[in-house]
Amino acid sequence: MSRLSRMQRQVLGLYRELLRAGRGKPGAQARVRAEFRQHACLPRADVLRIEYLYRRGRRQLQLLRSGHATAMGTFVRPRGPSGGVRSPETPPKEGDGPRTPVDGAGAPETPPDGR
Image (cartoon, rainbow, N blue to C red):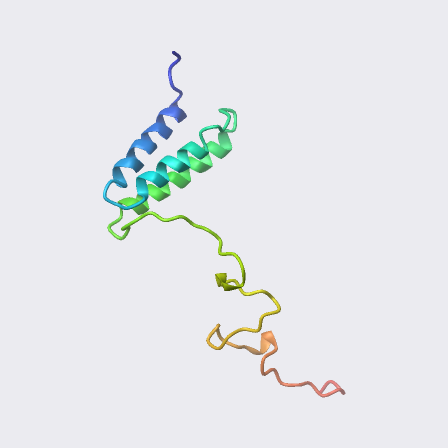
């Protein structure tokens, strides 16, 4: 069996650290395992992608270790009209943010002569 590269050792170490950090948090260990399985088939030559995922994993580890994390969820983009994403045709609801003259709401009309 060949020796592991430095990057492989770092990734395996990150995996172990993430599993340890997620011990008391619901769903964390399963999520870590699923993420690593999903990306296990990446070719060794795809170094940029591997480094990106490694850095992302380090950030997630910091979040898990912070005292504020109680569980580990997934980031899923909501679908459909009830998902919270407003389509361009939908008028904004009251309280959706400040209305300024730039967006056309309440902008003063300019007389046709330009004054």
